[in-house]
Length: 276
Length: 110
Image (cartoon, rainbow over all chains, first blue to last red; front, side):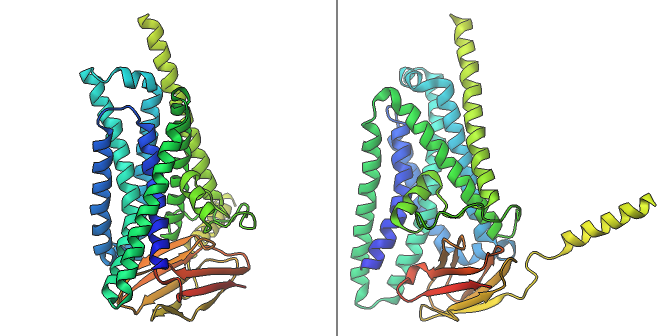
Protein backbone atom coordinates (compact mmCIF):
# COMPACT_ATOMS: atom_id res chain seq x y z
CA UNK A 1 0.00 0.00 0.00
CA UNK A 2 2.80 2.37 0.92
CA UNK A 3 4.57 1.91 -2.41
CA UNK A 4 1.44 2.65 -4.43
CA UNK A 5 0.67 5.62 -2.19
CA UNK A 6 4.14 7.02 -2.82
CA UNK A 7 4.18 6.45 -6.56
CA UNK A 8 0.69 7.86 -7.18
CA UNK A 9 1.36 10.78 -4.84
CA UNK A 10 4.58 11.59 -6.69
CA UNK A 11 3.03 11.54 -10.15
CA UNK A 12 -0.11 13.41 -9.10
CA UNK A 13 1.96 16.15 -7.44
CA UNK A 14 3.91 16.67 -10.65
CA UNK A 15 0.79 17.11 -12.77
CA UNK A 16 -1.06 18.85 -9.94
CA UNK A 17 1.54 21.59 -9.51
CA UNK A 18 1.17 22.46 -13.18
CA UNK A 19 -2.62 22.51 -12.90
CA UNK A 20 -2.31 24.75 -9.83
CA UNK A 21 -0.10 27.23 -11.68
CA UNK A 22 -2.37 27.27 -14.73
CA UNK A 23 -5.43 27.91 -12.57
CA UNK A 24 -3.68 30.76 -10.77
CA UNK A 25 -2.38 32.20 -14.05
CA UNK A 26 -5.92 32.34 -15.43
CA UNK A 27 -7.63 33.60 -12.27
CA UNK A 28 -10.55 35.74 -13.37
CA UNK A 29 -10.61 34.61 -16.98
CA UNK A 30 -14.15 33.40 -17.74
CA UNK A 31 -14.74 29.70 -18.44
CA UNK A 32 -11.25 28.67 -17.39
CA UNK A 33 -12.67 25.94 -15.14
CA UNK A 34 -14.27 24.26 -18.14
CA UNK A 35 -11.07 24.43 -20.18
CA UNK A 36 -8.87 23.10 -17.39
CA UNK A 37 -11.34 20.31 -16.67
CA UNK A 38 -11.36 19.42 -20.38
CA UNK A 39 -7.54 19.40 -20.32
CA UNK A 40 -7.51 17.05 -17.33
CA UNK A 41 -10.14 14.78 -18.90
CA UNK A 42 -8.29 14.63 -22.21
CA UNK A 43 -5.08 13.92 -20.29
CA UNK A 44 -6.67 11.01 -18.44
CA UNK A 45 -8.04 9.52 -21.67
CA UNK A 46 -4.65 10.07 -23.31
CA UNK A 47 -2.86 8.46 -20.36
CA UNK A 48 -5.01 5.33 -20.69
CA UNK A 49 -4.36 5.19 -24.44
CA UNK A 50 -0.61 5.66 -24.00
CA UNK A 51 -0.56 2.97 -21.32
CA UNK A 52 -2.63 0.59 -23.45
CA UNK A 53 -0.41 1.07 -26.50
CA UNK A 54 2.89 1.39 -24.63
CA UNK A 55 4.33 -1.53 -26.54
CA UNK A 56 3.35 -0.22 -29.97
CA UNK A 57 4.55 3.27 -29.08
CA UNK A 58 7.92 1.98 -27.90
CA UNK A 59 8.50 0.12 -31.17
CA UNK A 60 8.24 3.21 -33.35
CA UNK A 61 11.41 4.91 -34.59
CA UNK A 62 13.59 1.83 -34.13
CA UNK A 63 12.69 1.47 -30.48
CA UNK A 64 12.90 5.17 -29.66
CA UNK A 65 9.18 5.92 -30.09
CA UNK A 66 8.62 6.57 -26.40
CA UNK A 67 11.44 9.11 -26.25
CA UNK A 68 10.25 10.80 -29.44
CA UNK A 69 6.69 10.96 -28.12
CA UNK A 70 7.71 12.38 -24.75
CA UNK A 71 9.98 14.98 -26.33
CA UNK A 72 7.22 15.99 -28.78
CA UNK A 73 4.50 16.52 -26.21
CA UNK A 74 6.91 18.38 -23.93
CA UNK A 75 7.90 20.71 -26.76
CA UNK A 76 4.21 21.19 -27.57
CA UNK A 77 3.65 22.24 -23.95
CA UNK A 78 6.65 24.61 -24.15
CA UNK A 79 5.14 26.25 -27.23
CA UNK A 80 1.74 26.62 -25.53
CA UNK A 81 3.26 28.10 -22.36
CA UNK A 82 5.26 30.56 -24.46
CA UNK A 83 2.16 31.53 -26.36
CA UNK A 84 0.23 32.10 -23.15
CA UNK A 85 2.92 34.30 -21.63
CA UNK A 86 3.23 36.38 -24.78
CA UNK A 87 -0.53 36.78 -25.00
CA UNK A 88 -0.72 37.87 -21.38
CA UNK A 89 2.13 40.33 -21.94
CA UNK A 90 0.33 41.92 -24.87
CA UNK A 91 -3.05 42.16 -23.17
CA UNK A 92 -2.11 42.40 -19.54
CA UNK A 93 -3.97 40.98 -16.61
CA UNK A 94 -6.18 44.03 -16.23
CA UNK A 95 -7.17 44.08 -19.89
CA UNK A 96 -7.97 40.39 -19.83
CA UNK A 97 -10.39 41.02 -16.99
CA UNK A 98 -11.95 44.14 -18.48
CA UNK A 99 -12.51 42.58 -21.86
CA UNK A 100 -14.65 39.72 -20.65
CA UNK A 101 -17.60 41.01 -22.58
CA UNK A 102 -16.08 42.04 -25.88
CA UNK A 103 -16.76 39.28 -28.40
CA UNK A 104 -13.44 39.41 -30.17
CA UNK A 105 -11.44 39.41 -26.98
CA UNK A 106 -13.40 36.54 -25.52
CA UNK A 107 -12.25 34.57 -28.53
CA UNK A 108 -8.57 35.37 -27.96
CA UNK A 109 -9.12 34.64 -24.26
CA UNK A 110 -10.42 31.24 -25.29
CA UNK A 111 -7.31 30.74 -27.37
CA UNK A 112 -4.97 31.15 -24.45
CA UNK A 113 -7.25 28.94 -22.38
CA UNK A 114 -7.01 26.34 -25.13
CA UNK A 115 -3.22 26.62 -25.05
CA UNK A 116 -3.19 26.09 -21.29
CA UNK A 117 -5.70 23.25 -21.53
CA UNK A 118 -3.19 21.54 -23.84
CA UNK A 119 -0.47 22.08 -21.23
CA UNK A 120 -2.67 20.56 -18.51
CA UNK A 121 -3.56 17.67 -20.81
CA UNK A 122 0.11 16.96 -21.54
CA UNK A 123 1.04 17.06 -17.85
CA UNK A 124 -1.78 14.70 -16.86
CA UNK A 125 -1.03 12.41 -19.79
CA UNK A 126 2.67 12.08 -18.97
CA UNK A 127 2.28 11.42 -15.27
CA UNK A 128 -1.06 9.64 -15.62
CA UNK A 129 0.19 7.00 -18.04
CA UNK A 130 2.75 5.93 -15.43
CA UNK A 131 0.07 5.69 -12.77
CA UNK A 132 -2.16 3.66 -15.11
CA UNK A 133 0.64 1.23 -15.98
CA UNK A 134 1.62 0.87 -12.35
CA UNK A 135 -1.92 0.31 -11.05
CA UNK A 136 -2.74 -1.99 -13.96
CA UNK A 137 0.25 -4.09 -13.01
CA UNK A 138 -1.02 -4.39 -9.47
CA UNK A 139 -4.53 -5.23 -10.59
CA UNK A 140 -3.18 -7.88 -12.97
CA UNK A 141 -1.19 -9.54 -10.20
CA UNK A 142 -4.31 -9.74 -8.05
CA UNK A 143 -3.94 -11.32 -4.61
CA UNK A 144 -4.74 -9.92 -1.24
CA UNK A 145 -2.46 -6.93 -1.57
CA UNK A 146 -4.47 -5.46 -4.45
CA UNK A 147 -7.06 -3.81 -2.21
CA UNK A 148 -4.37 -2.20 -0.10
CA UNK A 149 -2.58 -1.02 -3.20
CA UNK A 150 -5.72 0.56 -4.63
CA UNK A 151 -6.43 2.23 -1.28
CA UNK A 152 -2.87 3.52 -1.28
CA UNK A 153 -3.39 4.82 -4.80
CA UNK A 154 -6.56 6.66 -3.78
CA UNK A 155 -4.79 8.19 -0.77
CA UNK A 156 -1.88 9.20 -3.01
CA UNK A 157 -4.32 10.85 -5.41
CA UNK A 158 -5.97 12.78 -2.58
CA UNK A 159 -2.61 13.83 -1.14
CA UNK A 160 -1.32 14.97 -4.51
CA UNK A 161 -4.52 16.91 -5.18
CA UNK A 162 -4.15 18.62 -1.77
CA UNK A 163 -0.61 19.75 -2.66
CA UNK A 164 -1.79 21.21 -5.95
CA UNK A 165 -4.61 23.04 -4.15
CA UNK A 166 -1.98 24.46 -1.78
CA UNK A 167 -0.02 25.67 -4.78
CA UNK A 168 -3.12 27.32 -6.23
CA UNK A 169 -4.28 29.04 -3.06
CA UNK A 170 -0.71 29.97 -2.16
CA UNK A 171 -0.39 31.77 -5.47
CA UNK A 172 -3.80 33.42 -5.08
CA UNK A 173 -2.70 34.89 -1.76
CA UNK A 174 -0.23 37.02 -3.73
CA UNK A 175 -1.63 40.54 -4.23
CA UNK A 176 -3.48 40.77 -7.55
CA UNK A 177 -1.06 43.34 -8.92
CA UNK A 178 1.91 41.02 -8.46
CA UNK A 179 0.17 37.75 -9.33
CA UNK A 180 0.58 38.23 -13.07
CA UNK A 181 4.33 38.77 -12.73
CA UNK A 182 4.74 35.77 -10.46
CA UNK A 183 2.73 33.41 -12.69
CA UNK A 184 4.51 34.68 -15.81
CA UNK A 185 7.85 33.99 -14.14
CA UNK A 186 6.73 30.53 -12.97
CA UNK A 187 5.42 29.65 -16.41
CA UNK A 188 8.67 30.79 -18.03
CA UNK A 189 10.74 28.54 -15.75
CA UNK A 190 8.23 25.71 -16.15
CA UNK A 191 8.61 25.96 -19.93
CA UNK A 192 12.41 26.12 -19.70
CA UNK A 193 12.49 23.02 -17.49
CA UNK A 194 10.26 21.16 -19.94
CA UNK A 195 12.50 22.15 -22.86
CA UNK A 196 15.55 20.82 -20.99
CA UNK A 197 13.68 17.57 -20.23
CA UNK A 198 12.69 17.27 -23.90
CA UNK A 199 16.39 17.48 -24.81
CA UNK A 200 17.12 14.57 -22.45
CA UNK A 201 14.43 12.46 -24.12
CA UNK A 202 15.83 13.32 -27.56
CA UNK A 203 19.32 12.33 -26.41
CA UNK A 204 18.00 9.08 -24.93
CA UNK A 205 16.33 8.42 -28.26
CA UNK A 206 19.68 8.78 -30.01
CA UNK A 207 19.17 12.24 -31.44
CA UNK A 208 20.83 15.56 -30.70
CA UNK A 209 23.96 14.06 -29.20
CA UNK A 210 25.81 17.31 -28.68
CA UNK A 211 27.15 18.80 -25.47
CA UNK A 212 26.25 15.68 -23.52
CA UNK A 213 28.98 16.23 -20.93
CA UNK A 214 27.92 17.09 -17.37
CA UNK A 215 28.52 20.77 -16.69
CA UNK A 216 28.11 20.72 -12.90
CA UNK A 217 26.94 18.32 -10.24
CA UNK A 218 24.87 19.37 -7.25
CA UNK A 219 23.72 15.90 -6.24
CA UNK A 220 25.67 16.32 -2.97
CA UNK A 221 23.43 19.27 -2.16
CA UNK A 222 20.05 18.13 -3.43
CA UNK A 223 19.25 14.74 -4.96
CA UNK A 224 16.93 14.93 -7.92
CA UNK A 225 14.90 11.97 -6.69
CA UNK A 226 14.32 13.42 -3.21
CA UNK A 227 10.90 15.01 -2.66
CA UNK A 228 12.30 18.56 -2.76
CA UNK A 229 14.40 17.67 -5.80
CA UNK A 230 11.37 16.34 -7.65
CA UNK A 231 9.27 19.38 -6.79
CA UNK A 232 11.99 21.70 -8.03
CA UNK A 233 12.49 19.53 -11.09
CA UNK A 234 8.81 19.91 -11.99
CA UNK A 235 8.59 23.60 -11.13
CA UNK A 236 11.84 25.07 -12.41
CA UNK A 237 13.51 22.12 -14.15
CA UNK A 238 16.07 21.35 -11.42
CA UNK A 239 18.63 18.84 -12.60
CA UNK A 240 21.32 17.50 -10.26
CA UNK A 241 23.88 17.13 -13.06
CA UNK A 242 22.78 19.06 -16.15
CA UNK A 243 24.63 18.58 -19.41
CA UNK A 244 25.49 21.33 -21.88
CA UNK A 245 22.56 20.72 -24.23
CA UNK A 246 20.09 20.83 -21.32
CA UNK A 247 21.47 24.17 -20.16
CA UNK A 248 21.41 25.59 -23.68
CA UNK A 249 17.78 24.56 -24.12
CA UNK A 250 16.90 26.01 -20.72
CA UNK A 251 18.63 29.34 -21.35
CA UNK A 252 17.33 29.64 -24.91
CA UNK A 253 13.74 29.08 -23.75
CA UNK A 254 13.97 31.70 -21.00
CA UNK A 255 15.58 34.21 -23.36
CA UNK A 256 13.04 33.57 -26.12
CA UNK A 257 10.03 33.97 -23.84
CA UNK A 258 11.39 37.10 -22.13
CA UNK A 259 12.34 38.67 -25.48
CA UNK A 260 8.94 37.93 -27.03
CA UNK A 261 7.12 39.28 -23.98
CA UNK A 262 9.16 42.50 -24.08
CA UNK A 263 8.58 42.86 -27.80
CA UNK A 264 4.79 42.55 -27.73
CA UNK A 265 4.61 44.65 -24.60
CA UNK A 266 6.45 47.50 -26.32
CA UNK A 267 4.28 47.20 -29.41
CA UNK A 268 1.19 47.22 -27.29
CA UNK A 269 2.34 50.30 -25.37
CA UNK A 270 3.14 52.04 -28.68
CA UNK A 271 -0.32 51.19 -30.03
CA UNK A 272 -1.91 52.54 -26.89
CA UNK A 273 -0.03 55.80 -27.20
CA UNK A 274 -1.15 56.13 -30.82
CA UNK A 275 -4.79 55.55 -29.89
CA UNK A 276 -4.68 58.06 -27.04
CA UNK B 1 48.06 20.25 -53.08
CA UNK B 2 45.02 22.10 -51.98
CA UNK B 3 42.44 19.60 -53.28
CA UNK B 4 44.48 16.90 -51.61
CA UNK B 5 44.34 18.66 -48.24
CA UNK B 6 40.63 19.28 -48.52
CA UNK B 7 40.13 15.63 -49.48
CA UNK B 8 41.98 14.55 -46.34
CA UNK B 9 39.92 16.95 -44.25
CA UNK B 10 36.74 15.67 -45.86
CA UNK B 11 37.65 12.03 -45.26
CA UNK B 12 38.61 12.73 -41.66
CA UNK B 13 35.30 14.49 -41.08
CA UNK B 14 33.39 11.68 -42.75
CA UNK B 15 35.20 9.10 -40.63
CA UNK B 16 34.44 11.06 -37.47
CA UNK B 17 30.75 11.28 -38.39
CA UNK B 18 30.56 7.66 -39.50
CA UNK B 19 31.60 6.24 -36.13
CA UNK B 20 28.34 4.85 -34.81
CA UNK B 21 27.15 6.49 -31.61
CA UNK B 22 26.84 3.14 -29.86
CA UNK B 23 29.74 1.14 -31.10
CA UNK B 24 29.82 -1.50 -28.36
CA UNK B 25 27.45 -4.42 -28.20
CA UNK B 26 24.47 -3.65 -25.95
CA UNK B 27 24.54 -5.13 -22.45
CA UNK B 28 21.64 -7.56 -22.11
CA UNK B 29 19.65 -7.32 -18.87
CA UNK B 30 16.56 -9.28 -17.91
CA UNK B 31 13.82 -8.24 -15.53
CA UNK B 32 12.21 -11.29 -13.99
CA UNK B 33 10.11 -11.54 -10.83
CA UNK B 34 10.67 -7.77 -10.55
CA UNK B 35 14.42 -8.18 -10.18
CA UNK B 36 17.20 -7.24 -12.57
CA UNK B 37 19.57 -9.96 -13.84
CA UNK B 38 22.34 -8.94 -13.68
CA UNK B 39 21.73 -6.13 -11.24
CA UNK B 40 25.29 -4.85 -11.54
CA UNK B 41 26.07 -3.66 -15.05
CA UNK B 42 29.57 -2.69 -16.04
CA UNK B 43 30.14 -0.31 -18.95
CA UNK B 44 33.19 1.49 -20.25
CA UNK B 45 33.57 5.00 -18.89
CA UNK B 46 33.64 8.07 -21.12
CA UNK B 47 31.90 6.47 -24.08
CA UNK B 48 28.25 5.87 -24.89
CA UNK B 49 26.81 2.44 -24.17
CA UNK B 50 23.50 0.68 -24.46
CA UNK B 51 21.46 -1.65 -22.28
CA UNK B 52 18.88 -3.91 -23.88
CA UNK B 53 16.34 -4.66 -21.20
CA UNK B 54 14.10 -7.69 -21.62
CA UNK B 55 11.08 -7.50 -19.35
CA UNK B 56 10.19 -11.16 -18.77
CA UNK B 57 7.39 -10.25 -16.35
CA UNK B 58 3.72 -10.00 -17.28
CA UNK B 59 3.43 -6.32 -16.41
CA UNK B 60 5.22 -3.15 -17.41
CA UNK B 61 7.98 -1.54 -15.44
CA UNK B 62 9.89 1.68 -15.77
CA UNK B 63 13.67 1.70 -15.86
CA UNK B 64 14.29 4.83 -13.85
CA UNK B 65 17.50 6.58 -12.86
CA UNK B 66 17.96 10.26 -12.23
CA UNK B 67 21.76 9.93 -12.25
CA UNK B 68 21.60 8.25 -15.67
CA UNK B 69 18.84 10.65 -16.79
CA UNK B 70 16.72 7.76 -18.02
CA UNK B 71 13.02 7.05 -17.66
CA UNK B 72 11.96 4.25 -19.93
CA UNK B 73 8.79 2.20 -19.73
CA UNK B 74 9.21 -1.40 -20.89
CA UNK B 75 5.90 -3.26 -21.22
CA UNK B 76 5.56 -6.87 -20.05
CA UNK B 77 7.22 -9.44 -22.35
CA UNK B 78 8.85 -6.70 -24.39
CA UNK B 79 12.30 -5.27 -24.73
CA UNK B 80 13.61 -1.75 -24.57
CA UNK B 81 16.90 -0.22 -25.64
CA UNK B 82 18.29 2.16 -23.04
CA UNK B 83 20.95 4.48 -24.36
CA UNK B 84 23.50 5.73 -21.89
CA UNK B 85 25.52 8.83 -22.60
CA UNK B 86 29.29 8.81 -22.04
CA UNK B 87 29.59 8.36 -18.29
CA UNK B 88 32.33 9.60 -16.01
CA UNK B 89 33.76 6.73 -13.94
CA UNK B 90 31.45 6.02 -11.03
CA UNK B 91 28.33 4.25 -9.81
CA UNK B 92 24.89 5.07 -11.16
CA UNK B 93 21.99 3.41 -9.33
CA UNK B 94 18.77 2.59 -11.18
CA UNK B 95 15.46 0.95 -10.33
CA UNK B 96 12.30 -0.48 -11.76
CA UNK B 97 10.06 2.28 -10.54
CA UNK B 98 6.90 0.19 -10.33
CA UNK B 99 8.57 -2.42 -8.13
CA UNK B 100 11.23 -0.37 -6.42
CA UNK B 101 11.28 -2.68 -3.38
CA UNK B 102 12.95 -5.48 -5.37
CA UNK B 103 13.94 -4.04 -8.75
CA UNK B 104 17.22 -2.31 -7.94
CA UNK B 105 20.49 -2.20 -9.77
CA UNK B 106 23.59 -0.18 -10.46
CA UNK B 107 25.59 0.76 -13.53
CA UNK B 108 29.32 0.92 -12.90
CA UNK B 109 31.30 2.93 -15.40
CA UNK B 110 35.03 2.18 -15.35
